[in-house]
Length: 357
Ligand code: SPD
Image (cartoon, rainbow, N blue to C red; front, side, top):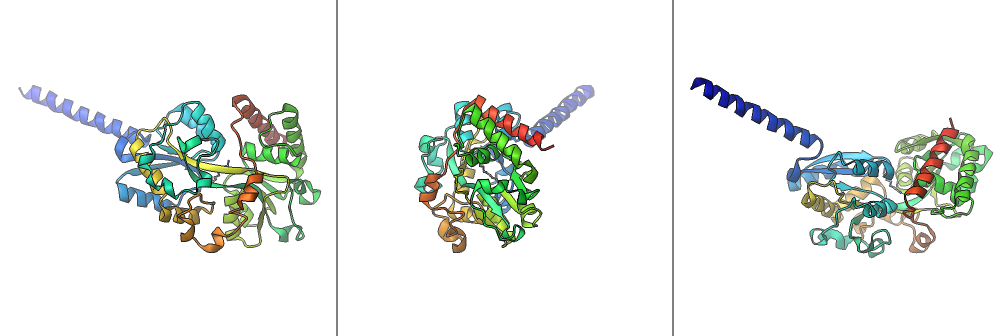
């Protein structure tokens, strides 16, 4: 009898240990269901205090991971190893993810704060009816520069950057579409060009910029520019706004040849295990006060109309970061160019990076 009791106790203990092991493993991979939410976002793209506020208000604990390019984010979601509940891709990637069946349709009834989004950011061609995505931040691509480091020259055009006077003075954000886009725009081509000769010409033009390129970097571009380690940077507008807050000597310009207008939006990937929690998180981020606080912290431009009056006026009236509708109409939004064209952009960008070494 004693032996039976011992055996029974041993089975209970082993089972409990096994259950505990499985649940810890799941929690570390974002698999623990209703009480956990795994959010996958760009680096420096949320006020960490808001994550704590969401956790306190809902009792859901957030596992937060970051990425530095749409391509890296999408590969991770395709692999399916982690159960991301919310991700924040840009427009052409949303279209691509939708096409590949990687997104879950949103239930708008669970996102009443959607009403706070300015209608001009809704129903855009990459996601008609916002079936899969909800606007998070938007902006442009342009040049942030420090006139005092370049003899008070004024920069207005992409082609200005090829000036030999700027040797080793330029930092580029590490984005294939952004850098290739600069090459294309400087030659008068579209950001969505798929003509092989045009793309090769853009890459050759970029090779000619090599002596002026100091480094190709990620989020550290903000610190490097603010510390005056380089005079000129190819950046997303929100990074420029952040840099200019740190160092008032700098200015930001959207080049005259044209540039990119981009939109980052929240989506629920197919990997989601907590779809209800994901809707709660999206709705929370669209609350006017939350959105205003987040926008002040992140420094990017908010599509949340109800948040604008709660933010400092000098921020929302700055036309460099809240450009007029008229200017934005002249800019191009990246399109989903299809697998092989996008792969060609990435290949040429990689060749350009190798050419520098
Ligand atoms: N550090 C946050 C960076 C967010 C940039 N998103 C812009 C993507 C444009 N395609």
